[in-house]
Image 1 (cartoon, rainbow, N blue to C red):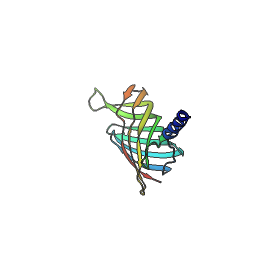
Image 2 (image 1 turned 45 degrees about the vertical axis):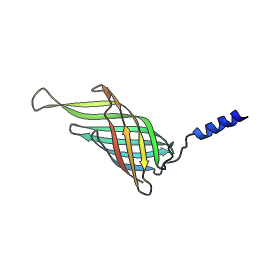
Image 3 (image 1 turned 60 degrees about the horizontal axis):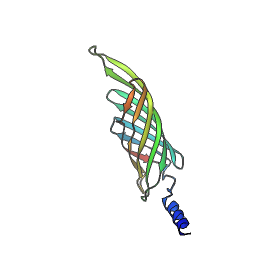
Image 4 (image 1 turned 90 degrees about the vertical axis):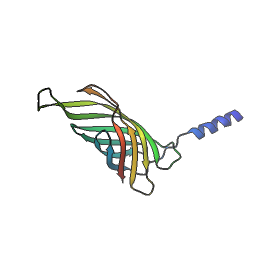
Length: 155
């Protein structure tokens, strides 16, 4: 009997707590890796969509992500998230011909993993994430350099 009770207690104690986020939408900025405007919309208690528009000195990139949120921490407002996504980017590269540039288009898939903290009694959240990408069309390859620190107004 004791092993059964021990196993049940272990299962109950290790069960991850799922709770709805303290906000349903958020808009803000994210840096570095360019300057991004980020919009986040919850579509279920633990799932959200995120759209990002990023600009940098030679281009523009739009990303869409589907994120799964997990509330495993004993800190109110703190969660971690992970999910897939996609991107399309437009940029210019210097040409061998002086004073000209070549336009490029990149299309690919993204992944994201990070932490999200909703500040108690304030309409703000802060996030820290890593967003690697694999470009499939255009300049194909793996780019580990996306992600950053975000701050958003929540509503």
